[in-house]
Length: 312
Image (cartoon, rainbow, N blue to C red):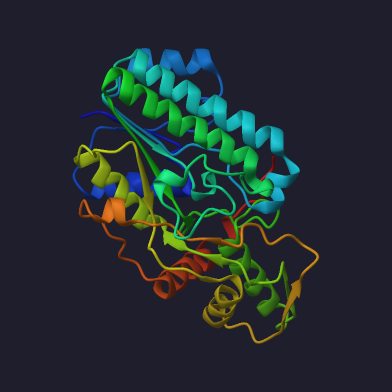
C-alpha cells in the first residue's frame, strides 16, 4: 500500500509518519512545500500521475491562532481551499480508494450545544475570529462526503480538537494557545520570572489532544472502513484557559505573575467535542494532558535553538 502524507513535515504529518513507520508501513511518500507546492494545480496533478498513491492523508494546511486568523483572513481561506481541493480532486481523478481529511473543531458553530456532536455542523454562525479557516475546512468535509455519497469511495474526515506536541509552532504571532504559553512562560522564567501577559479573561474552556493520539486515530481510520463521513477526535475532557496557564506555569517552573488582558478576544466560550462516535468503534485517546505538556516542554527545550519564526 503506497501512502502519501501531505504535510509530512508539520506537527501532525510528522506524527502520522512516525507512527506508520513504527507500525511497519514502509511505502510512504512525502514532499516538502519546496518540492511540491500543493496550491499549484498542475504540479499536484503531475505528482498524482507519476506517484499513483493508494491512500492520501491530508495533514497539509495553513494554521494559526486567533491573531493569525484575524490578521490574514484571505490566506487562511484561499490557501487551505486550494490545498485541499487539489488533493481531493486529484485523489478522485486518479482512483485513490481511501482519503483521510484532517480538519479542526472550529468548523462547528460558535454557540452550538456542548459537547459538540458531528451533526451540529452548519447549524449556526461560526466564531468570527477563525471563520475563514473554518469555512475552508467545511468545504473539505463536504467534498469528501459528496465523493463518498456519489462514488462510494472510502473518504473520511477527522476533526481533532486543539492539538499540541513535538514539532508544534511556537511563534508568538501565529501559534495556538498551548505552545504560545509554553514559550511565554519559558522566556519570562529565564529573564528572571517576569510577569506573563495572556490574552482574554482566561475563562473560555478548551480541550487539548496530543498529536500522537491524533496520529493513532488516523491509523485507526486507515486500518478500518469507518461507516460515517465525519468523526470528532479528542479526549472528551476540557479545562479553562486560566487552568491551562497554571498547569504550564507549574511545568515550566515560572515563579512570576500572570496578567490577563481582557481587552483581547476570548474566542468561542467553550469547545468540547463529543467523541462517542469514534469511541464506539473502539478508538480512545491515551495521553494525559499533564504528561503531554511535560513531554512537549522537554521537546521545546531540546529544540529551542532551532525553532524559527513563522512568516505569512
